[in-house]
Image (cartoon, rainbow, N blue to C red):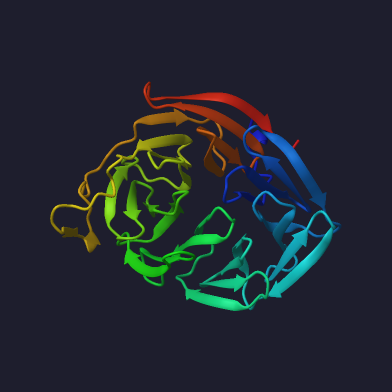
Length: 332
């Protein structure tokens, strides 16, 4: 790729909770694509209104949008009718948002607020540390209702986890002594992957027990972790970073099995595997150095970058092999 091709063009880029679609905003427009197989679904442009954030409700025509000229206002947009459904105003800048059939989740600089979608009644307000990147992780149930919400806590290295629906619970636990770089929930909401600020260690936690059940070491050199994704059966965790690499780690099937005796180290409850540094089983070097976000879709790994490139990779566990199968430039 030339230097011109790696210049960032996309201001917002994310997969929906099911990972079957992704949305992006470019200047005053947004586009929605199918993840795998790749194809464009719909797009919309606004006159004199650049977009900071766009997120989808499932794979529907309903989206949440934050416009650049109104960074404190959330708009819920119906693209089929080409009109605003709802606007919500906040006292600080919105850093991220998620939309579900039953709830709206809004992340500001140092708080996350959860609303009922039908009435816009505020049902929860969670205080966080300063969170300018808008770090939150979510899963949904089969009805596309919010199932699990993970947000940074007020303390360094802390996570607050809220389970909704059946068997609800709220928990708060330490993951690292230092700041967290990023984190991600497995699709079933049972595991949480958390990466340290220096990008060298990734820890896996059982969401119910709060045990640290596994630890991976990405490498010795510091890195900015861009994105993390579990596959559908929680046997693999993929990460990407500014080192231009994809690392895929293998997670043992019995990773959540309780240890025979309680163990604790560095303030963490430990699972049977403790804090042994496990290395990646597969690695792939990308040419693209831009920020990207990733997802396992139909047993393949999808990487989309904020300079408008889409990549599809096959993952062969038996051969420990990652192969690029497709490449598309989606902001042409």
